[in-house]
Length: 224
Image (cartoon, rainbow, N blue to C red):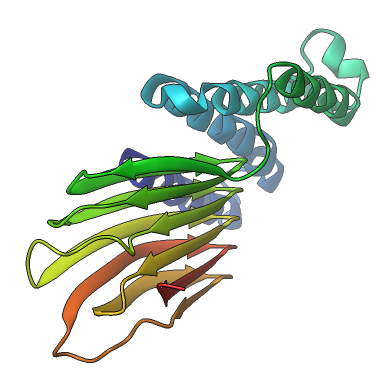
């Protein structure tokens, strides 16, 4: 997914900046005070452009990044004010507006879809996607600060093997599969965990789950 490439490039850039800072070529302060706000703004813009369902979250990330960036550069009234003095009231206003606009904070369950390949994403919310297809070929999932459930219990694989790629940051993902599936997890973990409870053996149809989970958790389990 595009989100995966965005985070990958951002981590590479951040690592290079850390190397330069350790060599004394730039200050450590410059990394945390400039890179992270720019990263938030970039992520927000990427979300606004590519995902209409998450535009409100994208705009929120842009605002947060701009507030911290303005504080570091001492722009306007921010130079005499802590960014948290603006950010916390702004978050309260944001939550209030979502309530007034009748946003449902309960788990949002997307209707059954017969797509053979899926691309799903979840940010700052709780969401469950249910799929029903007799020819599942694979999919992609992106999760950030959220709880995401991918329900595949009513699916059948198109062939003997299908692949799902997941990118999980600071959140939780649960993948539910039918009892006849054998799942092979190849998920890279950093300060997180991925528990695979759906391992039948090599004779069953195999689903391969790849990707990464950073400061988050994943569980792959059979139909409950």
